[in-house]
Image (cartoon, rainbow, N blue to C red; front, side, top):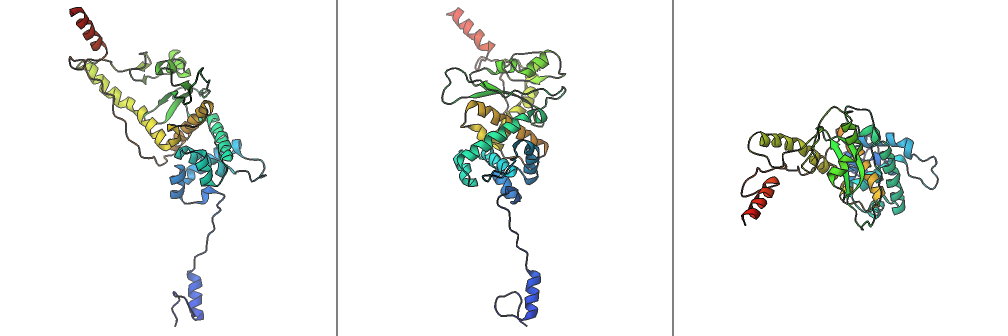
Length: 316
């Protein structure tokens, strides 16, 4: 009897065995990116298939096309295009070439999806202990703006790296303390609507609701206070590192400032979604603690430096 596992003339019985062992060919719908394998999706979009499907479900009422005229993008296509742009941080031309689309199509999809995600900020970015309030994501272009604009955002997070408040509207020339003072979260805390305490670094002013480290800690209770304070506050730095590792486009957004605000807000919404759904986190470097050395004669800091300069001036 001929072997049923080799090519060539074989008997009828061997042909029956071969047909029973054949696997049915599966043709993937290449117009739907969600039909690819999980590893393929995560390498390109930094999200799993269930995570991408959930994003498509919540965005479908906002970005779905009413017609297929002119080969309009489907919701999965638009979402995956934007996720690839956020995850890679590449040019829109490169994303368009990878997805076999025009650069203008990619630009419109990014703007539409980012605007839809920004409108969902109040559903995903919620400060604990109070009713939902409107997070700010507007931008006003300052006078004499340079070619490259830095942005400063007022952001808070909890111990699980979930962003609890976001105020993405300030240029980089504004000090962090002023950004926080002008935020709606500061007004809520000042009016006593929130029962809790925030941790901030030395760039912020001390408030009853905002604890900052001692600028010149003395050995003893002050140093013992600064150590757990820094261990806890470093969580916000690690959250920023995780956010930039997940969405590489945040390192340098090659768009207008008003659209950059929407993209930052959209990435924060996606970050909270990924954290809540336990998506696979990318690798990133943990940030070191802010070590505040005590006052000494060799390395004076803050008030110690001022005192040392005063003594030197009076003695000479």
